[in-house]
Image (tube, rainbow, N blue to C red):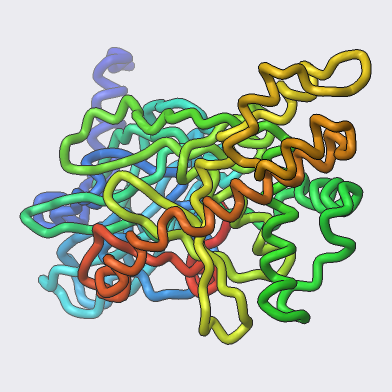
Length: 405
């Protein structure tokens, strides 16, 4: 009896196995994945979070990923699987491609981990893997690496192939009327006694102004200093961005620049039922608010003036009798009438009343500070094609831009 060598036996068994081969040639399918070139390889959490509940149809600035492929068969069932990452869950998109040889373009909507995006406070790389299946057969795999930016980084504009894209409307995403701090802030404002209730537009324009002043006085009591930190590490020359502090960051650090203060105050005004507007000019922003429900009249507010005095510092400077030393009082004289100064010096005015006189005077100045600029640029604000001057009505923008959170 003859015995075949073991190696020969294995070779015969291997040869008898059915031949496995691809039904679809990757070169024919030509599977391609592109991240929107508008963003120059950067992923902006603020953009994703701000538009997370948008009902507006996706346009070229909202469709982040584009997939293209050639259908290799009639009625081919294509399935695109995007693996999970640090910022996204597994995402699956399935479509039937009816015409063989036709090129199809698909736009998968990534299932983002919103909490992870919100928690991103410094840039980090993220890798996304896209796998293409046709009729349940894996055809090709593509990988994309992006630079995920800080959630504080607000996209202002971009230029791609000679076309400009404006994103300043994303400022509205940093207005957060739902922030849990606001309820306690409103309670503190009522305790100060400047107003006894928040009634929105139930009263007249004077009532509206009184409510805004009460919020203004609170911010001065809080002691918010002017601090500009607009720059970021973003190396792209085709996109413009700005670092913006969130509501709790302004509250906790007591620091703000013009846009930080605008979104902080606008958040509170939205909460009490008023209609704030952010006016954006080249290199500056200031706040506005409608004094009537019908939006017929608007008042202005230069928010950086909240830093003109530091009430907490003055509080710490009080002497044993609760009075301001002469040197500290001198800092407030520009905001006091002669009669008010004499009244305080004679002991007929308390420190609390003195602060109200000062905050009211600065409020009046802040209300008129941008009046000439607004009138001069009113036509530019009304021109939707002029992206250098924008009037951002927060209530109207809420239709598609939600608070970044």
